Amino acid sequence: MSRQLELSPTAHQCLDRQLAEALDLAVACRELSVRVRCDGDPLTVVVLQRLASDLTDIAASLLPLVGIEPVATIPLSREGFRPGADTWPAELDNRLGLAGLAAEVDAMTPALEAGVVRLLSKLAALYQGSRELLLAATAGDRA
Image 1 (cartoon, rainbow, N blue to C red):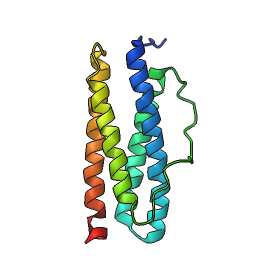
Image 2 (image 1 turned 45 degrees about the horizontal axis):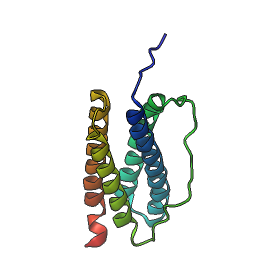
Image 3 (image 1 turned 30 degrees about the vertical axis):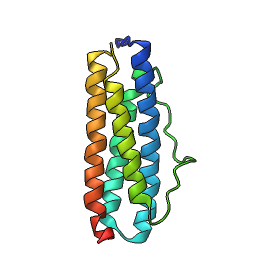
Image 4 (image 1 turned 135 degrees about the vertical axis):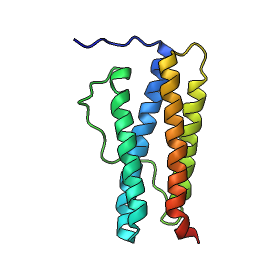
């Protein structure tokens, strides 16, 4: 029998927001990897696919914390994030930066459970590391 973790409403709200962001970014990275593959940039394709996979794994770990069954499907496409052909690296970098900042701010929420603070801090670090990796992978495109 699995033990259900009781979280405060504040923690639930923070994790729910992070779940939505992780899913949204995972789908964006998947879609961008298809576009970049067509452009013939295999290194960036690998970076984007890895980021999409990491974000999907994080989302899967957040699902039970926010009370959603892990068998829920993750959307394969979405509306909204439609970066331009030449601007997608900067736009994705911006999105990752904002997501990392949101995770850092959420982690500083008063009276948040220690485990949730650690999870949010690790998520912020993932976003920052992903930004750096993406920057390195796309540096040749800007040279």
